[in-house]
Length: 91
Image 1 (tube, rainbow, N blue to C red):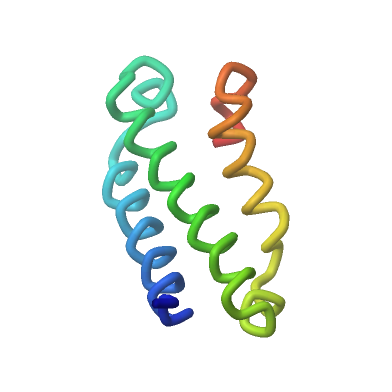
Image 2: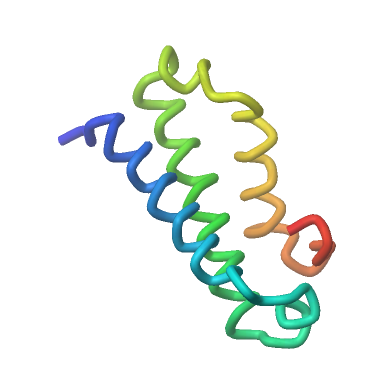
């Protein structure tokens, strides 16, 4: 059974909300020195990228309306596949 495209958009919203709540009141130094914090933030970015990738496959017309869709998905791919080359400042 195919997922409703809205569920992918909800996943994006939920992950973005999590990133905001995780980072609110935290510093860049916290991000670079706290492995668990960094992992949590990066996981949510990966969820955003994967949800948008799935949305693009499920409903290309809706996905085409998302600004920088390919860049977001590409960022997810770098996080997942190029984890050893991720610039902390880029995240």
